[in-house]
Image (cartoon, rainbow, N blue to C red):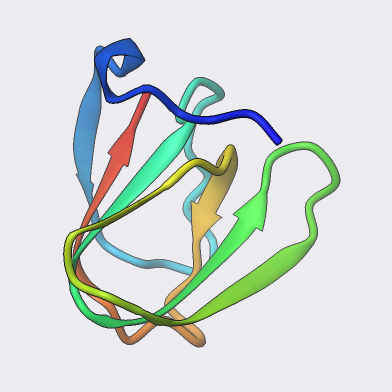
Length: 81
């Protein structure tokens, strides 16, 4: 398993979960500021995964193209690339 280096992240944007908004390629991490469930669609195979009970302040090293509104209760989400 590879590790995501915080130093390698050079771009970011705030995320409003939405079931149809697709992000451009390049986001390789996601930050959760307020604890909750986080549902994303993975970039490569388009599978939809729910990370349950993600603690506040968590940085997940996942490459995704959507942060789904359905199933997401976490807040203050940032897409990082």
